[in-house]
Length: 190
Ligand code: FES
Image 1 (cartoon, helix red, strand yellow):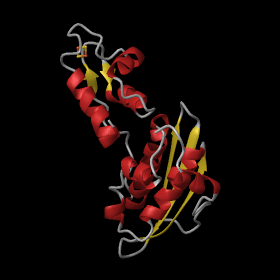
Image 2 (cartoon, rainbow, N blue to C red; image 1 turned 45 degrees about the horizontal axis):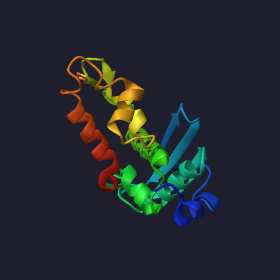
Image 3 (tube, helix red, strand yellow; image 1 turned 90 degrees about the vertical axis):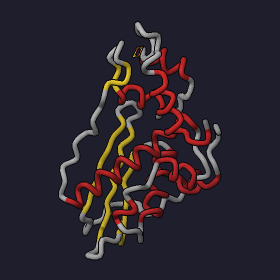
Image 4 (cartoon, rainbow, N blue to C red; image 1 turned 120 degrees about the vertical axis):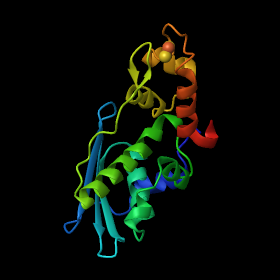
């Protein structure tokens, strides 16, 4: 889809749970350098491990604000162990769908949540392991994901933007892996 849904527009115009949360015990902040979006998510987890409250502060586009807003609604009242499994696809679906080139905004909300939960647990968030996917060209997973997360599902376009699948093996080794990454990200839309 290329249009914003009514649900998304409503969350953009009337965002829920905006602001900081002075008694939060978990805070996660993420940014997307390419877009300039910054998202900060606060959670307050009670002694039973339930997220009692959540707030966000987001500097970004309509999709980033709507993703943050609905993500707080989706995690409040949930056990933290359940909330951590919130996926970017679930956020996009709850918003009535998102334009493909804006799906990365839903990923930002998931990343912010992961960091807030890690902070609550007292863990240090290390960047996820970043394996090389295209060995011929030395292209890492993050570089390919960055393109996919911006709504690109065409393998030729991914090749043009990242140089993955353009090496000596002609993509024989890495193409199936990248195909799966696209399928995993876009789910049924692909
Ligand atoms: S592994 Fe990607 S082109 Fe060979």
